[in-house]
Length: 307
Image (cartoon, rainbow, N blue to C red):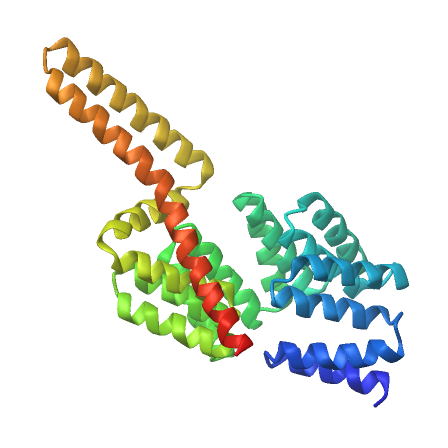
């Protein structure tokens, strides 16, 4: 098989969710052409899909060493850097690819993803709007807009964009997951679970769908359900407003304790203090329990893949 055929077959398999099949093609190609930059970059992207970030970083490094001007390699390098939380490095790679090709939609979406990871919601929107301007019917753009509005608590706009994405691509996992979160927000737990299962049927490695499954389980648990609602509300407020809310809550707590003590209500003062302590412990324990639930889902996916 020639290099072009193997590379095209790898792209096709990756697009169809056959990540391991794509990797096999690329390894065969690289055994005959070990300095093929695009093959190394595509292999890095495949490894990233399998959440093997360190191996992906090594492969994309080989790609850039073979061809430092390869646009696709810089794009993959940015994706790898984001997963490795090397945000400054990701920004440099994205700046370079946007300079090379400012009309590429996926580069605009990648920039939006980077701004989201940095907690810069205001800076995220221009990239999303630019991507949508370049490709108004692209399901990836529509799904990205849907998720942006969902995270901001703008439910109606989020649902509209998600449904538009599904009109363009009926099995778009990003749009399916966003709709699942919106259903969960409305208390339609079973429907949200079905959407998560639907998305996982399209891609068993979809981290967003696994996160939704964990959210459904948390929402269904009486104790974790309280934390899930609180966390969802705080997430919609954003980092700055969340800090303000917590400061106000602490001030109210301290005023209540002092006022109760001054009026001789010692028992009430102690109850308030114990209540605040319970809230703090619950706030710290909730995310850890949720992370363990998500890790369990990821492990189940890994085991099912291995067997």
